[in-house]
Amino acid sequence: MDLATEVMPNAMFALHALTVSDLEQWSQTELWEWADERVKALAANYGLFVERTGLTETGDIPFAAKQNLIPLPADHLATVRVESAGVLIKPANVVEIQSYDDDWDETTGPVITRWIGDALRVPFITPYPKPLAAGTLSLVYEQEAPAISATETVMPHLASVAGDVVTLHMIAEARRLETDAQIPECVSFAEQLAALYSKVIESYFGGGM
Image (cartoon, rainbow, N blue to C red; front, side, top):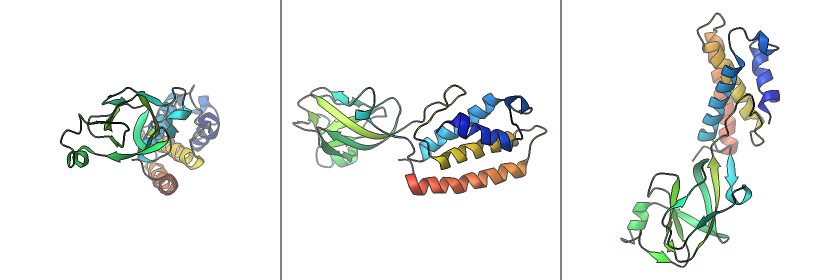
C-alpha cells in the first residue's frame, strides 16, 4: 500500500482539501505525523508486521559457542517462533527453567532446546542450554512499523482496512485541534468507526504479543 495515493487523498478529501494548498487549518506534515502515530500503534497492538530473519538482508542470527545472550533484530517487537538448523525451539521463562535447573545460566549442551525472553530486557534472548557449537537462529517476529513521512509512504504489508484506520485517525486528529475547523462530533464518529475497523483487524491478524 502506498499511503500517498491510497490514504492521504481520502483524508484530505474528508477535510475538504483537494490539494495541499487547500489545507488551511492544518499542514500536510501534521497529517503525516498522525499517520505515522497510528501505524506505529497498529504495529504494537496487532500482528500486522511480521518478518522472518532468513528473508531479510541481514539473514539469520549467528551465535557463538557458549554464547548466553543472542541479540534480536533492531525492529523486533515480539518473538513468534525460533528455530535452529530447522528444528523448532520452544519458549520458556526463567522461573520455569529454574524449577528444574538451578544452574541454568551455566548449563551447556549440544543443541538449544529452549529460548528465554525474560532473563534480561530486550533486545536479547537467552538460549538454554548454552550451545557447545556455533550456529544460527531463524526468527519469526513481530516488527516495528517503518517510519511514515512525505518521502516514506510505501508499506507493502499494510492491509486495506488498516489504511482505513489510519485515514480515520488523521481525520479525527485534524478535527480535534482547537481551530475554526474543530468538529467534536466528527472526532467521535471517526474514533468509533476506527474502533470497529480495529476489531476487524484483530479478528484477522490477532492481537500483538
